[in-house]
Length: 192
Image 1 (cartoon, one colour):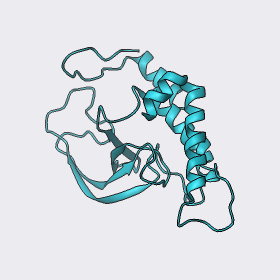
Image 2 (cartoon, rainbow, N blue to C red; image 1 turned 90 degrees about the horizontal axis):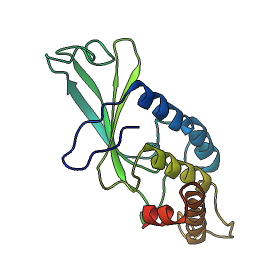
Image 3 (tube, rainbow, N blue to C red; image 1 turned 90 degrees about the vertical axis):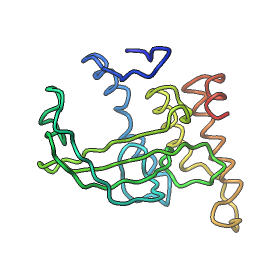
């Protein structure tokens, strides 16, 4: 797949093969979402990608420029001069409610609807704050989140909303899954 070139930022121009590879790499997300729902009592419906836990949201507007590259004209929301109203929110990157000391990175999600009724999401994560290098490592983090969702040690009497021992069990399971998927060195870099 095309690699990020050193130096100034350049837009990613995926080839057909890149798009096929990315689709395969992220194809496990629906299964991860299912595991999250089964394992985390505070989640009740599947949401998009990893943005299960909403922090804040509001109305957003998207105005499409009058001049567009030919490849974009008429695709999804991209009609020259079109204006769309949608919903925007700040979300955690992990996909589950969790205590603040846990590994996390914030993202933005803007959701709009096409004339045909299809939902289109724009997702953003502030680079380089994300602990992952690419979409493959992001999926590794999602797997670890899914595996950690139902980790816990049952105790009589919780210490507040989240039991400290359950939190430690979740963090341990999260790290063990990362180590299995990424290797020890990269897992330590990701959580460190």
